[in-house]
Image (cartoon, rainbow, N blue to C red; front, side, top):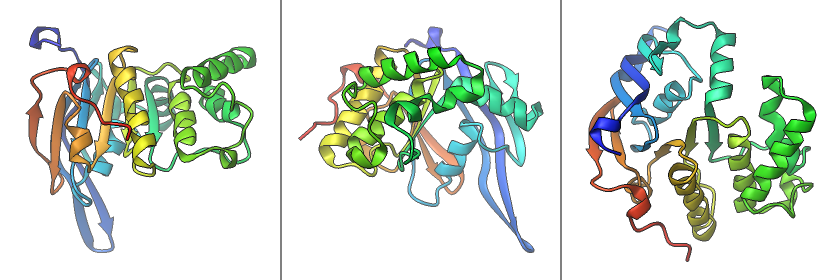
Length: 246
């Protein structure tokens, strides 16, 4: 991706997030300005307490800033109602969490289909999408299994399929390999690279793992509620050495 081809997708403009606890105020985000461009693979890197999880909530439209502005393709999202924000989030962003967040009483395909319930998609189409995506992540033989019958790596594959069911332009992955062994973790990370390189998704990775972060095109380093610095990578992640499944 050349400088000439960069198209801003999500932009945070002087975003602050302040929590009030009694008489105390805690500034968790302190004037963050950050642009995520269309088609990028960006890592948000920082230790616990740096503000990266709060920043994730802002990028994922899960929370609104105390001060500042968030735009999506130039549209000011801070002016939207809660319902309007939920509709934009559901269509635009696919979430992959460390904890999988699958419903234990639902089968794999039912879990994948779940986000489509809020988008007015006919049931037949929902089933088609769910089965197609589970096949894509290699779980065509596990569609009717419930989470308790799946390994951790398989559960995260279901979560990845679920994140794609509404065909979002953005994949937001919060420590997606944190609960997995090294082999499963490497396989999941390969999928993220595939989604970016081959499916042309914008991928935002939230992590404390420097090794994973260095496979992104850009790294935003978080420190004390601010973006301390941004590291631009010289080459695309598709040509770098990838995590090894050993």
